[in-house]
Length: 403
Image (cartoon, rainbow, N blue to C red; front, side):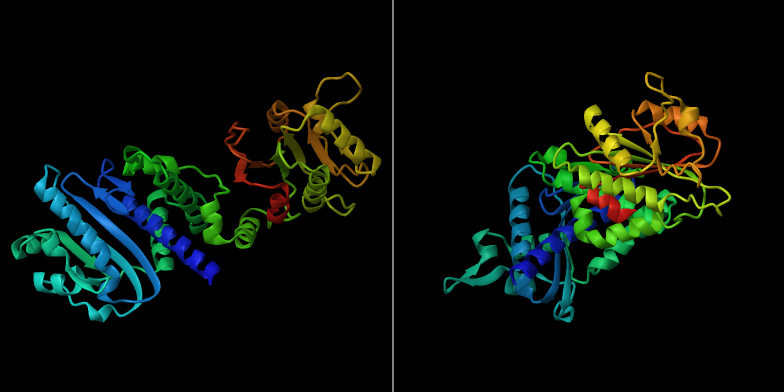
């Protein structure tokens, strides 16, 4: 039961975040803004009006008036504060999805309905009248109703996600995979990050700033996106998208991998090297264009790299690293020589980051670069004709599951 409750709570947060994303994408002006966790879950500010939205996802709940009574009372509290003070009048909206029962509410409502079903309640066996406690008249309640929108037929969870993906595809002119794994993934992180900020000023974001912050094509290892997608499904989709041309094309592939500074296990790194080599090499004598991949291990200590090479060599795993003899300088021509059945070169190890660029420029064949990073991409050289893929990961074992 506790696990299901936790899942429902997380899904409720996702629903609110997704609603914020929808509202940002639907804003008509780039300067229009929203505030996450402002007066309500999402405050929408345009040049002409401000709307505070309470967003709820009741996927397992039948609609009853009592379910939305509390948020409406809180909205009425704010209305009273604004009426008695100098704050700007705003609009209020309750946006909720319910499993059933929507026919119980007939819209629009009047002040009598508001009082009877949302503002009158029993607490500790005592009947209470919220409107009387706020000293509000029927005229004032009618004014509040004129500012209030109730929508209890909100989009279902996955339908709202689909709407986001359509909006993103239309805006960025991209395909469904990019909309979901790049832009939606990025959007979730942006909204989550500002939602937990204590300063309300930092929880406000304009449409233009939002689009700028989500407009990059890197697969983020975002815990919220992984929760939404599921780790196994995410890894499977990345594998299908990027790593299914297995051993088909004789491209020159570079696997640029950041070695974690904590929880490093050499055996895991060796296993990953063997996997990259096995899946992305083709050395058969019958292969007209044999090939094997390049690998660069970022942040690995020089001594650890040396010890790793010694182990690979002692196990008969043949590699080259671009050094022709002891004391020589790195030679991109040497490391870019073809692997084949005769020399049995299974992988090409690049010792330093700068060797990647030297080698890429040396090769005339089709090239692809796959960068796996922990926090931020570390190889930022762009090439007009080279496909580059950036994937964030947490554990080395994640990479093996992806490729």
